[in-house]
Every structure is written in C-alpha cells, then in structure tokens.
Length: 610
Ligand code: FAD
Ligand code: NA7
Image 1: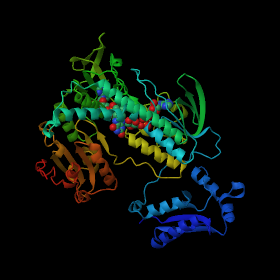
Image 2: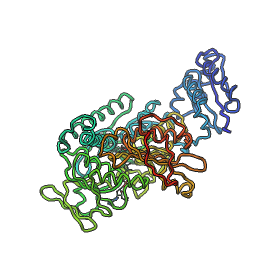
Image 3: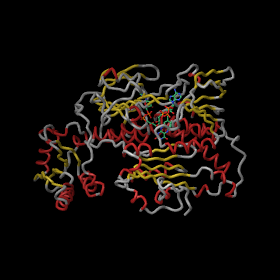
Image 4: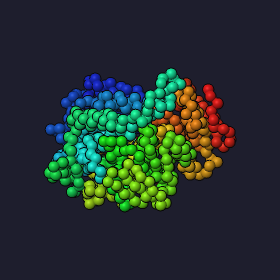
C-alpha cells in the first residue's frame, strides 16, 4: 500500500481561496483516509496569517523555511500549501496549485505512488547569493533552451550562452543547437525530399497522375535554400522567445574558471566574466572526424545540410543511424551513394530490423562496402577525392561524409579543472540525476554520460531539472522506454527492448514470445515497386507476466505510429491490453492490435489482409 501523504495548508478563515482549496482537500481526506491526512493551519485574520507566514518585516516567517524555492519565497497570499515528507517540507503553492494537486491525486496515474525521487544533493543556493545570475546555462541547443525558459518561468534570473565553433570545413550556424541547424530538422526535411521523389517516380501513375521526368531533375540548390530559410526562421524565433521569457541570451563561448565563475568570449574575441549560483552544462556534442591520412578532406553532418552544391557521388563512412539516414536521402535524391561499414549496420538496434533496413536500402540504390574503413583520402585539383580502403580497394568520390560517432563538447570548457568528473573516452559528464560531482554544476542532453542522444530527451531532462532547482519538484527524469525513429528510406520506429536485449534481460529466449507480421500498408498496395519489401511489426512479450518489452515498426510514418505506443509502454502495457485495443482502419498502426502469429510457431508472418 502507498504511504499516507501529510498535506499542510495555511490560510486565514474568511479567505475565499483558502476555503475553496481547504474544502476540496478535506473532502479527499474523508474519501481516502489511508492515503491523505490534511493538517490545517488556519488563522483568524489576514494580519495574523501574514505574521505567521512572513514574520516581522517579511524576514523570519514560516515561509523562510523554504529558502531557495523561489516560487515559495514569492508567495504572500492565502493559502500556502506544502507536503511533509520524511522530515522535509515540499512546497505545493497557492489555491490553483493545491486544486491541481488534488486533481492529480484522484487521477488514475496518482496510484503510481512510491515513484522514485531525485537523489540531488543540496547546492547551497540561497536567495541573496550575490552572483550575477541564479542560473547560467551553457549551450543554447534543445536541452539548454528548454532548461533556461523553464527556470525563468519560476522567477529565476537566467542567462543562456550559445556559441557555435565552426566545423573543420568552416560551417557555422545560428541559435538552437544541433537539432535545428545540423541535425533532426534539416535531416528530416531532406529525408522528406527523398520520399517525395520516390512517390513522384514510382507511386503516382496507378493513381492516375503522370510521372514527371525526374530525379535527374532534382535541384539540390533549391532544396538547400528552402531548408536553410526554414532554419533561419527557427533561429529568429528562438531569440524572440528567449526575450519574451526573460532569459538573457549571450552569443559567447563559456569556460569555467571556478565553480561559480565563467570566462566568456564573444565573436570579436573580447573576454569578460560572469558569475552564477548554479550552472547547467548543455553543450551537446560534435562529430568525430576521420583519423586517417587525408581525413581532413571529409565533411560531417555539420556541413552536409548547408552545402552550396549537390554533394554528387558520395561515400558515407559509418553504419549507424546518422550515416544510414544521410545515405538514404542522398540515394533518394538520385545521387550515387556508398556506405562504408566497419562491422555491422545499426549497432545496438534490433538485428532482424537492421538486416531488413540494409536489404531495403540496397534495393533503394545504396551500395554497401562491408568490413572496410577508409585508410587514405587524396584530393585532386578538380576536388574529387580518391579513397583507399583497408581491403586495398579504392574509388573516387565527389564527397566523403563521415558519421562515425560524436564526442561531447567539453574539451575546452574547463569542467575537469573545477572538479567535474568526465568520462575520458568520450568527454561526457558523469551525473546523478543531472547533477555533476560539483554540486552547483548540472549537465543535460548529449553532453551527459548515459543520456540517449535525442532532442526530446534533452528537452525533457532540461525542464525537469529546472523544476527541481526552482520549483521544489523532486521528480527525477525517467530515461526508460523512450521512443525513437530512424529515418532511413524504410522508416523504423521503436520503443523498448530489441529481441536480443529482451533475451538477455529476461534470462533466456524461451521466456519471451515474439509476435510479428509482414504487411503492405494500404497506400503502397497499388505500387508494384513497393511489394518487394513489406512493412513489418514486431512485439516482444515476457511470457511470465504478459508485459510488452519492445515494439518495433518498419514502414511509413514510423515516428507517428510509434509515439502513442510509448505512452502505453510507460504505463506497463500487456500483450492482452494491446490486442484488446480496437484498431483504426485502414492504417498501418492497427497491425499492432492484431498480432497473433508467434515466431516460435514457425508460421509465416505474412499478413493475409483485413
Ligand atoms: P546541442 O543541441 O548540440 O546544443 C549544444 C549547443 O551548445 C550548441 O549550439 C553549441 O554550439 C553550444 N556550445 C558548445 N560549447 C559551448 C560553450 N563553451 N559556450 C557556449 N555555447 C557552447 N535527435 C532526435 O531526437 N531525432 C532525430 O531525428 C535526430 N536526428 C539527428 C540527426 C543528426 C545528423 C544529428 C547530428 C543529430 C540528430 N539527433 C536527433 C540528435 C539531436 O540533435 C541531439 O540529441 C540534440 O540536439 C542534443 O541537444 P543538446 O541540447 O544536448 O545539445
Ligand atoms: P554512432 O551511433 O556512435 O555509430 C558510429 C558508427 O560509425 C558505427 O557504425 C561504427 O562502427 C562506425 N565507426 C566508428 N569509428 C569508425 C571508424 N574509425 N571508421 C569507420 N567506421 C567507424 O555514431 P553516429 O555518428 O551515427 O551517431 C551518434 C549519435 O548522434 C547518435 O546516437 C544520434 O543519436 C546522434 P562499429 O559498429 O563500431 O563497428
């Protein structure tokens, strides 16, 4: 059974807001006596209440026991609510916050009591700390922007630093970090360009349209311009939003001098200092460069999306998702594209799915050179690059794109010098609940050891950290069951474990059941070229308790299909619950609700239609 919550409410007897909140709380404590006890601190008049809450000269009242919780420190009205927990008091808020708390108390998810709490240590934050800022966030990418805006919402004085160091090939960009400028956004738009090309070339005729003469006709320059204009619009919006949310934006490069002071350098090389009580490091990562003779002639994802001209015949080095996604859209745009694979495709992902993606890409026109790495790159005066591979073979390319991993951007940040522990292998910062080994320095997103390198993860971690730092929350970030999508030509959406990991976690293969189906999405059914590689769904189930351990989907709109199932996975969905869900017809996602063929049965996974 969950622990009884001890909820305190203070107010003055004829205050309407206090009475409204108290009455709801009192009713709940009658309905759920084992779960809720209400302690009432009621005063006869407004003055008596204020003298209890604020004390003499508004300095030594009860409110002062919440030192450092800026929202509590600003609360002067009635009611004033908090929850007593193991000797400490957690501020809830005023009337609206109390009513919101009551709503969540009676909602079904509130039965998740016993949730883990953050293990963050006190960092000596106090209202009159005397530093320039309550919080300085270093890095204005996905995580940094989210954390800074959320902290400002709770009244904290916040600055965010963002400075882009040019890539070795000289590319730079605006505010917003990797995702917006050189990651998710341009990648998905160019992937979409390739999908449009595929539809125009192969799918339109059976629907009664004439196929236009393409893809030779694809204009890289036009696509690049549209994509870059969109990005510039986003950069501008970020600046405006920061201003609106009272976050100071500084286009400066930060470096720690001590745990409360940064040295900051602007574009012109002018150096100054700024201090803060708390810091959040959100500097993300940068692509690893190719470490072989002539490696400097290769570009990375930092450069590809802003190339002035088509990359032409391209070699993509690396076989993880960034390399495969880029190879997929380049081939889709009609370019001669090869992937150099050192060992396997998509390490860490489900093997069966990785093989299906590889086979589809090959038929999609991508060439694979397996078991090789480049050993030498030589650039000729016409710009062409001759690549010699480790097996002695060689070929000539217009562009070599390296996607062989990313390293945390901490090298020149001075974190080690102030005592922040990092992993020497990848430069990532080691944290517990986003708190580093120096209590007032925190880290979120790609720069944090163990954090999945995904935009929504950085955003969520940033928001939740800000709530813990400035709003009295004790809820830690949950890194389990995060959905993701690989935007290869055949898109792949996944939440939960791969078949290999499920076997390992559960102990042996016989304790899991795999349900699967090959099927043709309705929108593909009129196109002959789509028939060779069907879409695919796979659900991995623990036989003991029927819990779904992993869901895998290969097919169109994989992100859209997978997202909602992520909620169900977080709630601990069983196979029975999944198949008792009524599907939406005719969609691809409905296949998940009708998975009956098990892998162990040896029956064909091919769908027989609706
Ligand atoms: P970033 O967004 O990298 O931001 C860090 C910022 O800090 C940068 O602007 C940097 O210039 C700045 N900075 C660094 N050092 C300093 C300093 N000393 N002072 C001041 N500023 C500094 N994720 C997805 O979820 N979906 C996808 O489809 C997806 N596709 C991707 C495709 C590619 C090609 C790449 C490279 C990544 C992709 N990702 C995707 C990953 C995603 O982009 C990252 O996980 C996310 O951007 C991380 O956010 P962050 O806040 O940790 O860091
Ligand atoms: P990953 O996911 O770290 O994968 C790196 C890939 O590059 C992988 O296929 C590696 O092969 C390969 N690799 C690594 N070093 C080399 C060298 N020296 N030569 C050739 N191939 C190599 O990197 P990504 O760049 O795709 O993405 C990094 C993250 O950024 C990703 O998680 C996204 O969320 C954002 P291996 O399998 O090790 O043999």
